[in-house]
Image (tube, rainbow, N blue to C red):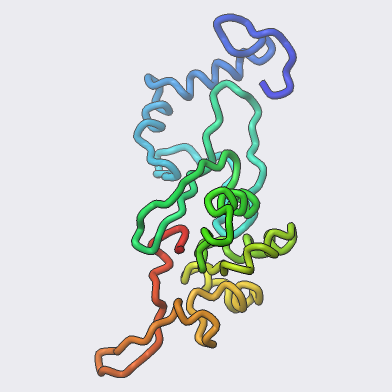
Length: 211
């Protein structure tokens, strides 16, 4: 148990005081129990009507992550997520495991490891948390080096939801600006009547990162 200094009572992983919590844990995680069968059949993040209520904190995709709650160490913790960097074609360039959260700081550290030099950095980095990552980069000073080579943009869905009330997102993270500031993100196309119109050059919903 978290914070407990008592000796464990074999063959359990808890002391006599917390044996009840250990028994409850082993019961719920046993393959022979109904809960154990549900855990084997359940897909990650799926919560079907017959599943128990979702426990723990759920991190919205565009907000900072809460600290995970953990009362014991009876089983090893799960990694929060696997982050990938993909090319526009969908090919995976790099990946990393984030232990506790998909925080902007973790994302920036991941990018620093994959792109350590200015020559290696992409022109555009698309991620649903781009406005949060940009704010963090400005706050910790790392934006001083990233602004020389790259621009953080959000995916189209995120932009639609944030453009009305988030000035930073609307001004600097637009995935398809029409002011000419990012000509590589906007292309000319023809509609069914052969009339020209501007559209986004990339489908930002395909990849987590767009390089």
